[in-house]
Amino acid sequence: MKLNTRMPKSLQPFFEEELNQYRFNRNQKDLRTAWHHLERAHILGQAYPWQHSYVHWKMLLFGIHIKNYKEIIGQIPRLLVGGVKSFVGHIPVGNTGGANVPPLKPMAIPDEIMDIFKKAGVKPLA
Image 1 (tube, rainbow, N blue to C red):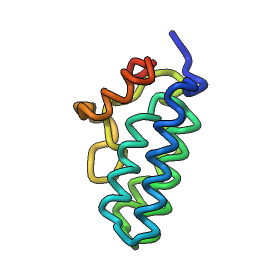
Image 2 (image 1 turned 180 degrees about the horizontal axis):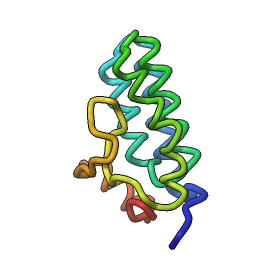
Image 3 (image 1 turned 180 degrees about the vertical axis):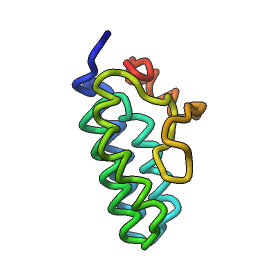
């Protein structure tokens, strides 16, 4: 069994760009686009414990900011176990991470995100 501990350096700039876009759009009050970038960051980072947990933390804070109790309650268990599941390589591939989707449901990875993985030379879940 392969344990995932660190995001490859080649993938980190793409992950950071999604977080930067999240912050920019949140600050512009474009909450729909901000959330979209958090979901993209989740897909890129879900195989890596720190990044996976960090995105769930940001999703929890986003839920608090918009006063969405379903999101707040939904993020707590994801935050508690997401990083552990990443560490042992047992995650639902492509899951966008929000409380609006089942936490263990694999989802198709959008072509744009697959292109990012290819550019970074990383297989999803590597």
